[in-house]
Image: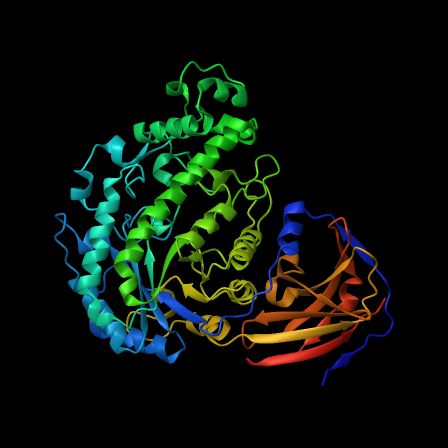
Length: 547
C-alpha cells in the first residue's frame, strides 16, 4: 500500500538552471540497469608483500564475517618472473591464494606487468624486471613523451616481443595454479601503467602535476613509424594527406605527431582533420594492444572457466574545460569511450572502472566531472552489453558521503561488483576492524535497498520530463548527478526507482527538464518528500505532485 504525502500551502517557484549539454546528454542516455544477482564486494590487498600470514588469516576472517566475498591480488612481474626469462616462481602467490581459499573467500588475481611505485597511493617499489629491458633498446621498448622523457612503468605496445612474454606468463600461471580451479572469481589482465589501459601521460617524473592534461606519448621511433604507416594506409598518397590536412608535406617521412602538445590542444588543432587522425591512431594503439594481449589471455586462461577483465582509468579532470574539453583523457589515449568499450566487447573482457566515489569540482583549474564520466562509461557498457565492475580512485577514509556516491553509481548503473582500495583501510594489521569497515560494508556489501516512487499529477507540458533527485543530507547538495529519470505510465503518473546503499534514509525532490535541456526545479524545498530509513529490501511510495 502506498503512503500518500500531501503538502499544504504550496507556492510555485521555478528556478531554471542552464546546464551544459554534455551533462544533459549523460542523463538522456542513461540506461536502466538492475543490480546483478551475483553482485559481490571485493577488497584489494595492500601493495607491500605479506610477511605475517597468521595476521593475514585474521584479516581475511574479518572480511569474510562482514560480507566481503572476493580478495583482489596484484601479481607483480617483478615477483613471479624476477631474474630470468621463463624462470617462473609462483610460490608467494600460491601461498597467498591458499590462505584466501581456506578463509572461504574467492580470489581475483591481477596480472600486474607494470611497475609498482610512482603512482598516487603507491607505497612499494617493484619495477619491471631488469631482464625485460635487456631485450631491446630504450627507444624500442619504452614510451617517449613530447618532452623527451622515457617512461619505464610498462613496456610500450610498439615492442611486439612483449606479447610473447605475456603469453609465456599466462601459460605458466595456468599450469601452476590448476589446484585453485573453482576458487577464482575473475582474472584481470594489466594492460598499461598502474595496470590500466592508457598511456603514462600523467607522471610527476615527466613534469606533470594535477590537474594538468599530461604529456603525449608518441615520440619514440617505433611510435612515429606506426603513425606514418597508419596514415599511408588511410590516405594512400602524400597528396591526399596534404589535401585533408591543409599541409605541403613531400613524403610520409614528414608525417609526425604534434610538434607542440600545448599548441595542438590550445589552438584547436586537435579538432581539425589532422588532430582527429592523430588522436584516432593514438587510441587505436591501445585497442590493438588490448586485442593482442587478451587474445593470448583467453587462449591460455579460459581453462579456469571465469571471466577475464581489464581496467580503465577515471580521468575526470579537464573533463568539462570550456576551452579544451577532455584534453587529459585525449592525452592518455581515451579519445572515444564508445570505441574503447567496443574493444572490451570484442575481447570478451569485463571492464573495471574507477572514481565512483569522487565528487565533482567543475571549476577552474580542475573542471573535474567524475560523476558524469562514470555514468557515461557505465551507460555505454549497459548499451553494448559489457559487464563492468566498480572501484574507488582514492582512499575514502570512512567518508559516508563518498560511500553514498559510490553506492548510488554502483547500484543504479549496472555495475556487477565493487572493489575497495585497500585492505589496510578497512582491517588493521592484527585483523581488527578499522572505523571504515562498517561504513563500507553497510553501504556497499549488503544487498541494496530499492525505493520505487510513483509521482501523481506531475502536469508536464510537451517536451518536458520528470526526474527524481536524491537529497542534500546524503549527497551534500541537491545534485542532478544523482537524478534518476522517471518513466511516464499514463494519466499524469510517473514512476522512478532508486537503488541505494543499505541502512540509509533519503529525502527526494522531483524536477522537470524542458525540451531544450534546462532543468526546472519544481517548487524548491516545498517539494521535499522524506522516505523513511529502511534496511535492505524494497519499499514503494506514492507522492502527489503539487503545482
